[in-house]
Length: 98
Image (tube, rainbow, N blue to C red; front, side, top):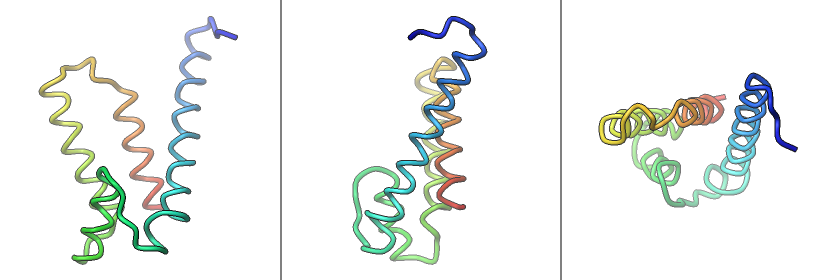
């Protein structure tokens, strides 16, 4: 069912993004990297490798790299790149820290 009210449509979109990120973070922490020392692709996988080789935490490295990539995205893809992308990145970084 499509939501017609713009406010509730935005709430539903951001709620879906938030829940999806939390599921991904739980899977990341429990099943993939921290207890098993597996390294998968992307920034989160690379952060596992960096955290094992340095004193940086995986969440700090993920936050820094995601912010750098967001800046590059805005430079090369423009403003329409998306507030949702910024929101999802911040939620993931904060959730990994928590």
